[in-house]
Amino acid sequence: MTHKLRIAQIGVGAWGKNLLRNFRALTNADVVGVCDRNTDTLRKVALDYPGLRTCKDPAEIIDDPKIDAVIIATESPTHFELTKRALEAGKHVFVEKPMTQKTSEAIVLRDLAAQHDLRLMVGHILLYHPAFEYVRELISSGALGEIYYIYSVRVNLGVVRSQENAFDSLAPHDISVALDFIGNRAVAVSAQGQAYLQPGVEDVVFATVYFEDGKLAHLHTSWLDPHKVRKITVVGSRRMAVIDDVEGVEKVRLYDKGVDIASSVSPVVDYATVMTVRSGDISIPQIPMKEPLLNECEHFVQSVLNGTTPLSDAENGVRVVQILDAARDSMKRGGAKIDLIAESA
Ligand SMILES: NC(=O)c1ccc[n+]([C@@H]2O[C@H](COP(=O)([O-])OP(=O)(O)OC[C@H]3O[C@@H](n4cnc5c(N)ncnc54)[C@H](O)[C@@H]3O)[C@@H](O)[C@H]2O)c1
Image 1 (cartoon, rainbow, N blue to C red):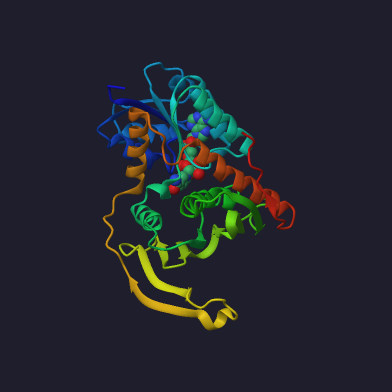
Image 2: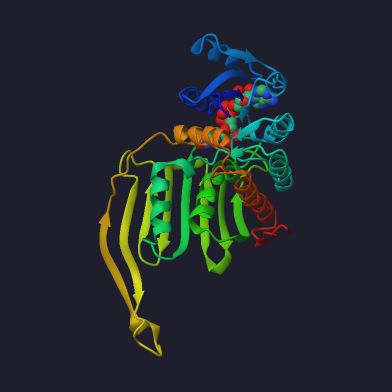
């Protein structure tokens, strides 16, 4: 593609307006129109961006041959239909998380994008966050050793949604990180949650994702909590890392802590005697910060212009939705462990 990427966006609500601001900041893309079914929302956008084309019907964007890519930032129940229509019309798509509500739908979209050779990227924003990029590099360089387990806490008071539970709304971020940091295939999920505010919509969910080779991720999500916490702890065999996104500057802390097992004692008769607890320094690396959303928007545009696979591609979207689906299933069955079935080739 030699020209600037011509983008249009569907959904400019609370989050969509941030996407719009960031896509408009890019020099290799032109936002040529926005669509929202809410008249007041459209009026506000028209005031903020005079001259920007606005419409209420997504078809005006999806069927416009002059538009290369569509950004979908509507509520999650609409993601499947809108993304499907856009892909069928030959558009590259950026869709907000969760990609869809069901795994079967996510698979349809992934396959459709592959069939038409279109980029389909999901808004798993933490994968584009400088603090997470920093820890990912540490993990791939081996600096943390073997990753044993991860746990995350993502709790706050609000935003309470009615069409998805707190796990569907908040956990896609942490799941995408766990998949990325652990690397192994997720094999099972168990979850427990409770609905207090609306029947059938869990406000708090505690979930465990089991990975191959015994790796674990535990996720605590809630929109009914007195604290605002956005923290992920990564426990490796050599070092441990904590990413605290509520911290203004010092977002990553590295702990030179672990338990070393002497390999020279052979045969090992009593593990307790050959294990040494190592409690070393705590360091706070300086990480140049950049708005994660801007990174994410740039990544999408570059993937389309260069024909490369985005980090949070459709396959990544499918894997996250599989875990959300399994967590819902597990909660219905009182926390039972639900196996994730590997797709047959
Ligand atoms: N990446 C993140 O950190 C992050 C943060 C918040 C929300 N989100 C995601 O962004 C999406 C939107 O969330 P939000 O909080 O902005 O919701 P919102 O309800 O504030 O905005 C959604 C907008 O989409 C419009 N809309 C819905 N269906 C439409 C249709 N068929 N045609 C045209 N317009 C339509 C609505 O009128 C509304 O203005 C969700 O998927 C949410 O999970 C992501």
